[in-house]
Length: 168
Image 1 (cartoon, rainbow, N blue to C red):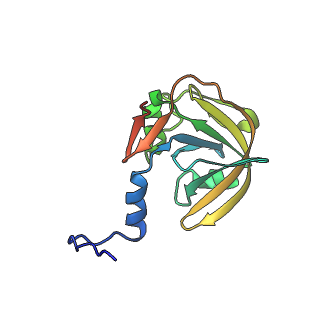
Image 2: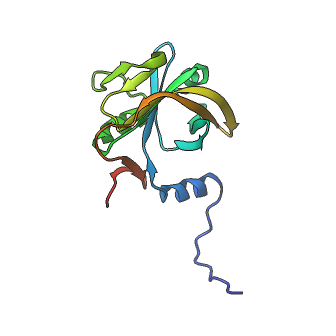
């Protein structure tokens, strides 16, 4: 057995370890929207395809998020895949206190009353099927009921705490 010499740096543990490791993980960027008393939305990098039959996806949302009360009550949500030309939109929906649906954001009301963002690579309206407790978050499981996968451009990525373009 080989023992590594002590480099004087204690290993990370807990939340710091998780954050540090996931900074190394490049993820696609999505915006999740819902309509409560007003439209709400947030930038998500936790979007995952769960199953093809029935079609299911998941994403995580903090219960302290300003969007959580509307998402918690929503029967349907919008999922938007952002393009590399939408860094500012991603930043707006990630910024606490931002006017996410203000004049700078082009959007419309879609199926089931869900706010839909314009100019995205793809969007889906999904029926919420479950909200699973996971620490200070909820994992939302949803089934697509409508959408459009045919927007122009290339995907926006999040890596090392920054929005980035995909490179070949």
